Length: 224
Length: 231
Image (cartoon, rainbow over all chains, first blue to last red; front, side):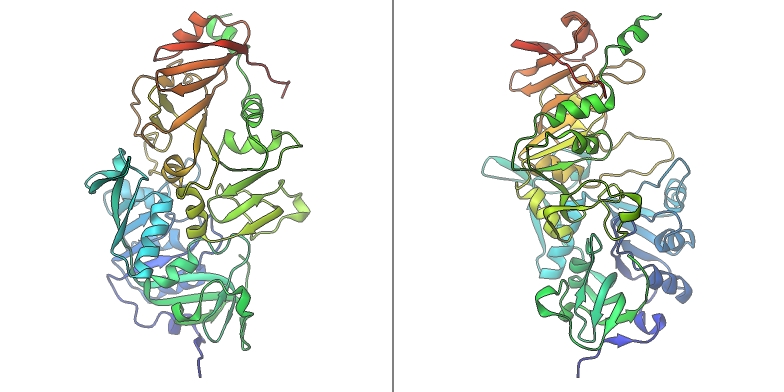
């Protein structure tokens, strides 16, 4: 019988180790798996490469993770903190203590999609002729120039969803999906924290992330 | 009164600039508005036109800003503002949202910018701020993928330096992709032969506008007065 439910955050993170690459969903804090990230800090792992859209809003799990010095590098589309004060990431970055790979957001999503779908990479016109194309193969198709972007994969993906079932199927709400469904496809182990965890199957017409991509589901009541 | 202060009285406000850009949005179009002045455009789209506003975090069909007691915390736009869903709107993930963008399904994107060159190159993502990390977000994807890229920006910096230039000095967002530019002094098109002024505010001479621009300006034969309601 399929049952991907786990009882504790520690169970959800079993197998996570130093040096791992971890994808974290979330956009403007909506869909961020903050409970799992706090458990990850508790677990004491370090030298992580984080793949997330941003580098952590003030007070978010990701900001705490960076502040705790557990992150070696971030791959993201936004490395800017809010407001005038430097974020934990900005402090670490300007001090040379953390690596950064800045990626246009659509390219970021597509690199993860490629990773999940088994493709090595793709050619995109995004960023051609800019600093973010530096060092990348450029190739002309038809009358337009493209650059080669390569796939992103991870050891773990951590997501937040509104609803999950014991099969690992997930449903998101509002703007909560963002990078969750695609990150689920691109990691060795995908863990979701969900507001509602159901014993009966979710309506198959409405599933946003298929259980085939999701390994563990943790019940974490709460909001977006 | 200094010359600079005298000029200020002629400049459009941010809301007036947004109003002017809104007048060019066509019925039944799909539009992505950038953060800052661009999102103000949503307030001024003529009521008889249906425009579906897209947000790259996965909302197609941004509705009016919700009242305080109608905020749904699950619904925010790419700038983190609480939003509602318009009639006919739908929700997707980031892959779906960027397929709309990079696949050429967005008719118009309107973005803020620091500089635009007369060949259509423009810079809007990295102001090289001290102590601030870089943020590219979806700017380069929108610039490369939207069918039409329009910019909205002050004509000059606070120090009076031109933002319409021969060559951008800030890091580029895209090469050759800018079309129309809305400033607080003029509406300028980027054409194969450079900048062409379509409209300019009253009380400003062509020479004065040219002096505030860092690349040659041509003036449309039917160059009009840029006027907006008090906003």
